[in-house]
Length: 303
Image 1 (cartoon, helix red, strand yellow):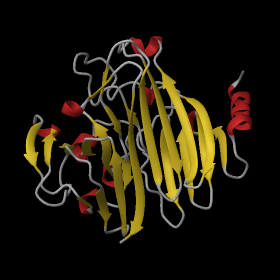
Image 2 (cartoon, helix red, strand yellow):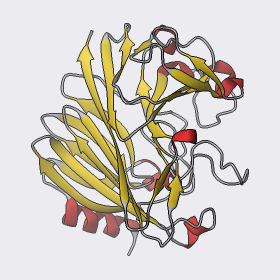
Image 3 (cartoon, rainbow, N blue to C red):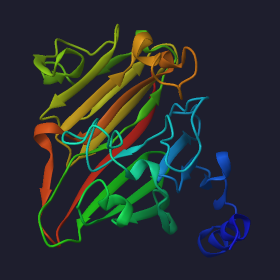
Image 4 (cartoon, one colour):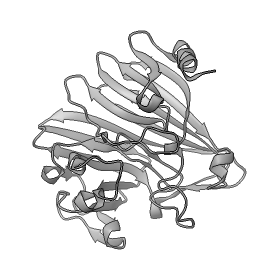
């Protein structure tokens, strides 16, 4: 079946007239477009990757690079990539893909359902010969995203194997900002973090988080909500989360951006990643037949 017919069949099976449709996105990749009175959103089957969320009355919330590579085997730069089953580089294999392999693979569409909260799009991926090249883990990963006045992400990891499944995970959210040097992140005052720009030394956050240089911090034992305040866009993006013990805050700054070929010139100023995650010492172990669900909820308010 060719790609056009495949999309037509997917849209026939899953689309909701005037609400959600399966269509061809950038690079010819399959995408779900959501349009409702509450929101506009886009989610690719490539990586089960959310690339746009614009609730009614608001500007676009997510950053997307103008230089992103739209092709199989490459990660989309921006939006909300899924990091699994490891975060950053794989400790025992420097040749393994950064942040795991599920963000560069095509997922399967399971359902599109209209709910009271919005439009829920569910996709899944399972372990196979390609994933076993990098990890023996046997798993089924389900990503359920509800596009509404809030954006809710639920990532379910099911251990389908016969041995314990050990993994890291992150919902690597690129928040769009007017100027990263002017934003403030509230809710982490006094929290310990590991500074990846300084050999992962443990430090304590004094007051609000502000960005004035390359930043890659993993805040430890964080369950509370955090607020990203953007004075130039006059808005607050709030991240609430469950079953997540670490919050990653990342921006490459000018020097780090030079090494990112899929990031446009100067675009490092336009985002701050604030990520619900379980990484490093907060990595998880799930017993055979059991599952774990991490969730994140984004909401927007005017300042």
